[in-house]
Length: 237
Image 1 (cartoon, rainbow, N blue to C red):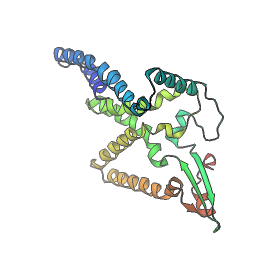
Image 2: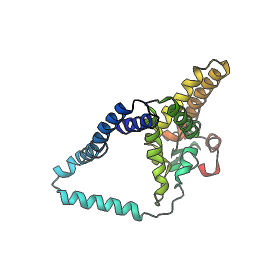
Image 3: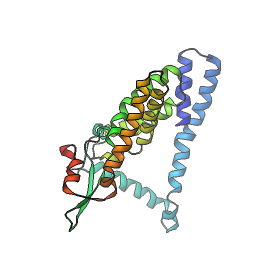
Image 4: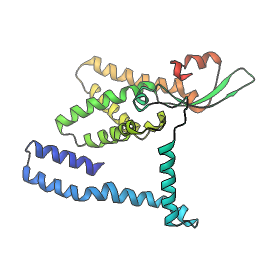
């Protein structure tokens, strides 16, 4: 991401005519290293994770057979699942994944769901758009890292035909959190008192939502009434 980010910034500088000769040299140098950083190193790291596989007696042919089997599984997977959701629904936290429940003699029930903090997830896309526009204008070197990290791991799911779930947004979520944090910091640094107040209230709201929904994340028992209070939308039930 860092190498790709530098390429974007150097290309931007060249497009604007900033230090043209130096920009061309830097762009060429980064283009040389891009295949190493984006192809060779990831491939070697991925192969290294299969060390126990090879140590168990499997060979390189078995490795490629396994890759083909995994690819075919995801290419042909078409099961109809109630918890499945479309890629654009994930930042909206519309459809959680329900894993199970346990009823207790006391009348309480424990459920476990996979879903994001709604107040945090709802801010991902607006914060990323704001950060992208603002950073592009300022030449912020963090822009490509966050933008590629978030959109690059989320938007490709629009092309995936198999059923997918909200947890597929998790690799992009840290980058969304960083964009939200940058927006909060920007509000806190503003001269207007109401902006700082808004930033503090938002952070408190996100923290309170985490505490409120924690029983659903941690499989803790709740009364029927307490559970109903946490089912904000029909698709959460």
